[in-house]
Image 1 (tube, one colour):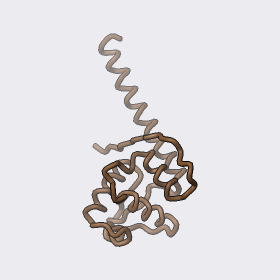
Image 2 (cartoon, helix red, strand yellow):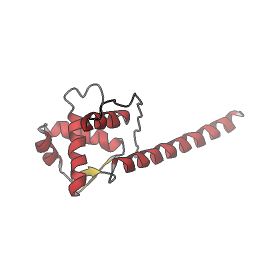
Image 3 (cartoon, one colour):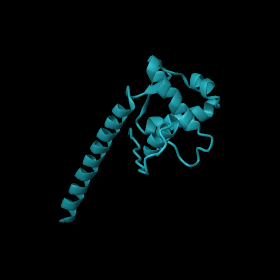
Image 4 (cartoon, helix red, strand yellow):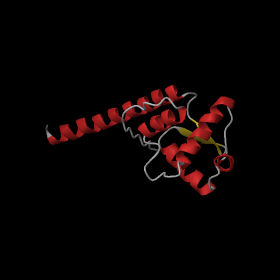
Length: 133
């Protein structure tokens, strides 16, 4: 069964207008980076994929490892998490962001979350019916 993990962590919007801080806040709000990502590995991978949007290229895990100066195992681990979140796709061993812009990413994720809530609500309705509630 395919699943998508959707996490939303809303904090105060960054006061600084530095693009790196804004991207970190954006992706952190989507739960893409955790506290355990001390060397910002996932952030660096996300940036490499974001930069590849400009050129339309898709990257292998080896190419991402080379660009980010990370071990391939670390890259694959984070790519799997990003795929679980629904924002990264892979075709022919090349990874890419599922959408063409960050705004489009938010729209996709919102649609995924809305679908998930609909399925959860349907099951809740069935359980309520079976319990006579």
